[in-house]
Length: 165
Image 1 (tube, rainbow, N blue to C red):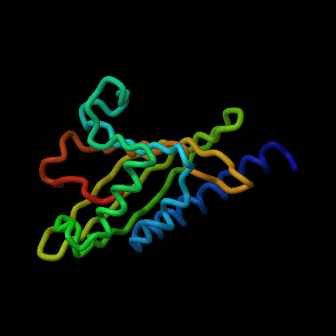
Image 2: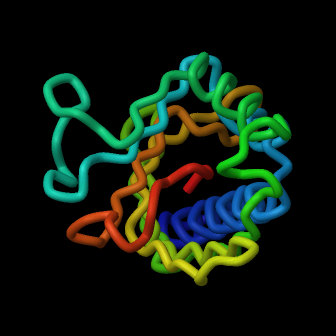
């Protein structure tokens, strides 16, 4: 197989992975979504005014390790979590997937649109770019790090990000 064929095959595999992930999140299959992450995964949503900042010295909208992600999922599934009960209805669109292999890591970027519908509320649209660091564990792709960089200048009218982008 040529380098080009290998590159196209990998990009197609990662696109399918992102589409599957989007389906899990849209279906609120959050436990299944957690299975797509490594045991040391991180999930970041940087501040809208500093999208390229480091979570080590900047206050992020979300900066979760795997333990906090598991807690977030438990909270989101709890009927007492009024901000997401009943859960928002979301629809994700993923496009412009770009892939770069860096040793054992696969850096994959993609543009996203997430439409969020809440009962009695407006439809909100979140747009941005995913920056992912993926690894293979036992032949399966897993998310080691997810960065969801929002395009907006401020969250303001969009409200809080109480669901998983």
